[in-house]
Amino acid sequence: MSAKSLGFTDQEWEDISRDIPGERDPFLQKYLEGREALIAQENKQRSDASFRQNLSPIARRACAIVQRIRDEEKSTVWTPQLEDALAQEAEGITVHPGMMFSLSKARMESTKLWRIVRRMPKGALLHAHLDAMVDFDFLFAVLLDTPGMHILADRPLSDPAALEDSAVRFRFFKTARTEGDIWASNYVPQTPILLTQAADAFPEGARPAFLKWLYNRATISRTEAVEQHHGVDHVWRKFFSCFRVVNSIVHYEPIYRQFLRRLMSLLKADGVNYAEIRFSWDLDYYRQDSEVPEGDYRAMMDVLDEELKRFRESEEGEGFWGIRMIWATIRSLGTRNVVQDMDNCITTKLTHPHLIAGYDLVGQEDLGRTHRDLLPEIMWFRKQCAEEGVDIPFFFHAGECLGSGSDTDHNLFDAVLLGTRRIGHGFSLYKHPLLVELVRERRILVESCPISNEVLRLCGSVMSHPLPALLARGVPCSLCNDDPAMLGQDTAGSTHDFWQALQGWENLGLAGLGSLAENSVRWAAFEDQTTEDWDRGVREASIGTGLKAQRLREWAVEWERFCLWIVDEFDG
Image (cartoon, rainbow, N blue to C red):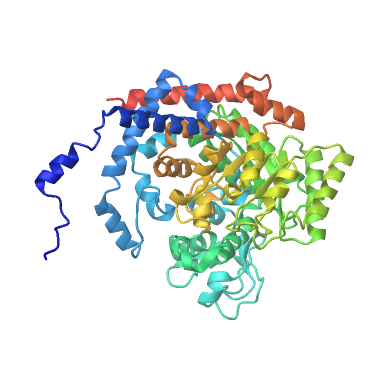
């Protein structure tokens, strides 16, 4: 007996196909209506739902145009041939829109979408660290051009290991120190050597090779960014060493002034009108021509005041709202050093109240002290603030980790309980349904930094980042760049993060980007406010009467102009 064939006969298929419902079948149409209604119902819960609903006709046209360009570039710019070529160059790594940032950067900067996002009014930058903001090609040129700068190291820079991980510093000295060779094995540790002399004497390449070496010491390279097998702790060790190299460059007044000018110029050119920047400096700031560090932060803050005023009064700085600092203590420090830094924060708040926006604890959460461990110091800080008559709100880093239920992950609970007004990163927040609801109800904004999270190994690419999950649950968020000079963006602006979000996430679109930018203004700490006034300002947004409402209205005008430009430039 022969087995029956498994395939349909033509007659059988003709009979069966008559029973398959068509697209216009009433039953199928009813299902599709229910399907669309369910999607629409979920979309109403998104944090950007209100922004989308209130788009002007011009903004809606602009959003449609950008969506068309995004789809075109997804199929024409990011072709399989390009992906294959880049993948071979990157030793077999799969390449795609929203792919690993370090591999896609050059390509993204050549697209129409980049041109559009670059021009977008991005509002406020709410999460960035001062030393890691300005492009190093500029900073190193200033360093070499500044008279009296010297280089010091904790051991001879005469072998590959020392070149890679030695403690290197830069200092000003009035009299040039030219005795010795920092690249030789007989170099005496901590001996200052005139920087220009040392740079020109760099082995195998002189000054150009020196600059390449210094750049590698101050940044996470493309190779380091994609070598996932090294793990989070490995890349964080390199990241921390970058700050050790850079901070002694910036902490000398003539360089600091040029650094600030460059920072504000880059922000303004990128559509960022205001920034709140984490500030984690030891007392190692030197005035011009001084070999003795300052004993407090007055001189440093005076310079910031002066440079802000100069820039805002310039033609280039027209419409720039300003910069404030969030004092940030390194969380791995012991109790005495933490309390001393907290005391320095309070003192500086008393001398320059308009420049200090809040307080934070920073550094790798997994290897640092948890909020739970730091509670005694935090409570002391609150008590001292009350006694000194100052109000310094919290803007805590929390959830910048991979754990679920770990002590580090639980920093999120403490951040919420301690009344943080925003959460830095909040990468692991999506794992906590109750906290998600509390953050949404209490209107706590998440300062999301997708490229930073990728480069520091929390996710493989923007495609696997949890920010879309938070937006879908109604959590207010903003996009931030964190440490752009060290992580590969090479600029203080946020266009790279905005571009990757737009190209990487299907349901964001230009409207979603606009909402994130508006949020950055809505949750900015432009001025000191009580908790009650802060909550009212966030709740009332542009219909309020304070400075925040004014800034939101100004941003809305810029947004409409931007949307009109898109329509004029790209429609048809």
